[in-house]
Length: 122
Figure 1 (cartoon, one colour):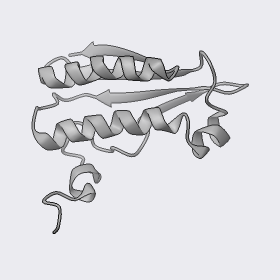
Figure 2 (spheres, one colour; figure 1 turned 90 degrees about the vertical axis):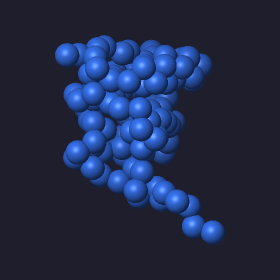
Figure 3 (cartoon, helix red, strand yellow; figure 1 turned 135 degrees about the vertical axis):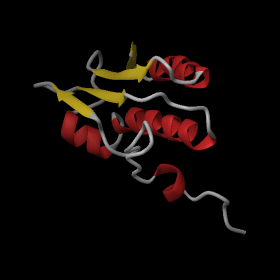
């Protein structure tokens, strides 16, 4: 039986979605001695449709896991205490579900030593 929606359909590049690139870093700041701050920019309102919510959850998961991946270890020398943050700038007209997901994810990330910083833009 085939899934009704493949990963490509959900997470493939889509410049018409507020989260255009799920498996790419929007911004990265690195530090001598290790660590990285990663940034997500959601400049247009994120809607509550299944695809947009799935893309948000996957982007957050991808960013968090990157700190602990072989790529993160080699490129950013992570995990590095106090030097792992994810900054999210999200449009103020985004759906309430997006804000709830980010608030919940803030706790998940903190348990792994990653700080989530959310700012709301207009």
